[in-house]
Length: 102
Image 1 (cartoon, rainbow, N blue to C red):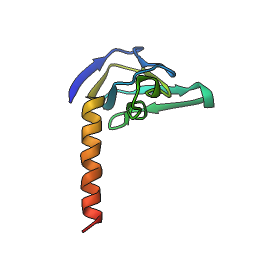
Image 2: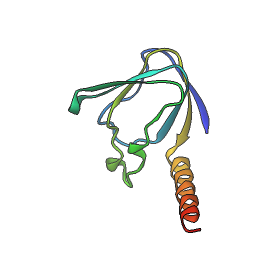
Image 3: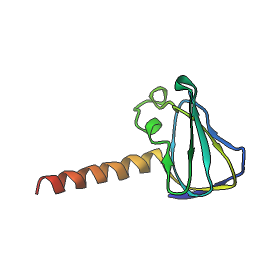
Image 4: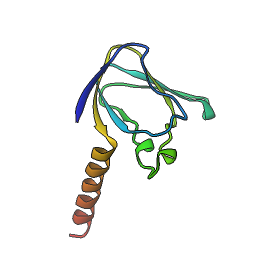
């Protein structure tokens, strides 16, 4: 896990971008998001996470960002690379299966 700090107005990614490689958890600050296809607008703040949908595709073309995310203020993130995210989520899945099978 790495820490990343962004300034107000920074665009982390745009809807339709290919090759999502980062999962974000907001540690401090806030972002706004928009999804043009559904005319949806939202705010995320401390403790919220995003970016996971684009990490699940097997090829770069399948890893499409589904929203545009913009920092609303100076914002600090904990980030996970795609490889680390998939490893951690796989471990959580396996642990859940073990618990269910007890």
